[in-house]
Image 1: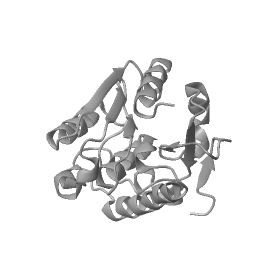
Image 2: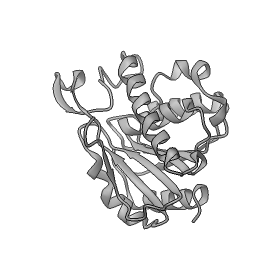
Image 3: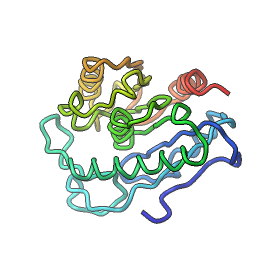
Image 4: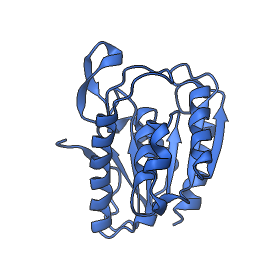
Length: 218
């Protein structure tokens, strides 16, 4: 996990922090343009790089991945050990920022696709209250374990989920099923749909900015 982090801020005294996890095969630089478009200088953005690992779905090809993926169907086997190990790594990154003086309530987890799955998984289990979750074109992994593993510290966690109606990678139905699981477990989910494939669009970025200003005001 060497050189895991890139930080897009020159404000070392920032009192808010967002960890933004990229999608499968990308890296932390992938969302730098979006961060620039958001124009939120009071927030420290940290863009981690997932480690390289073989990905079964891609014939074992090695790429940056938060965990292994065996398939994208709801019945596909999931990499429980990999997901939980990465959760511990993200927990440690959050705790490092808390140790630097940023309260947990001013830390938000964001992610796209596989990165969004890690954001949802980690935040619902974290043992200190967080500012919220930004879950883009993604799903909740290991969702059948949520009611057993969720931590009461984040029961009131604001969750902002968005998905493209033309997404052929993670289907809209898959994302909606995750939303239903979260709501059944007591979370308030703010749901958005956009006319786009497995990507991010300008209207979505505008809505993200409004959400972030609401949960992490200057």
